[in-house]
Length: 87
Image 1 (cartoon, rainbow, N blue to C red):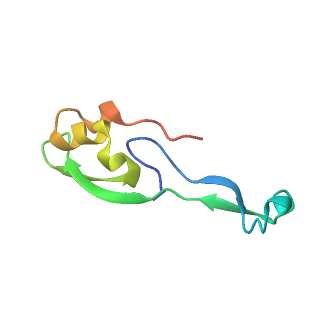
Image 2: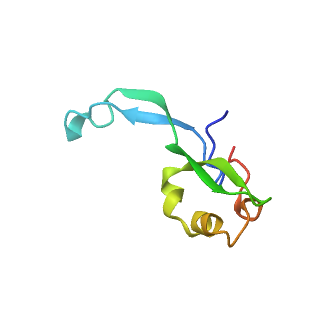
Image 3: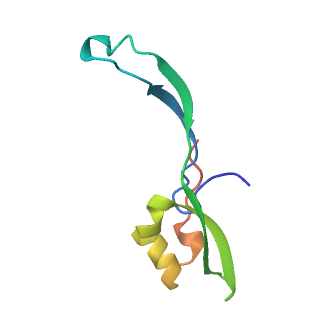
């Protein structure tokens, strides 16, 4: 299963991390490491659309969002809130 948030569509991103800047004079000469920034995905059980329950993967940042709380309380269906994955 891919690590993509069901609410926001967040997934892993590539970027560069400066490992050690030493001092301000070395800021632009410091070694830069390419890496992948991964999303903190949590598995959560929410009410399903057929009346049962459903397990979805949600980013930890979205656990307190209004969109997720409306799905959790049953006000909105997951299909109304879910976004397409970002590319």
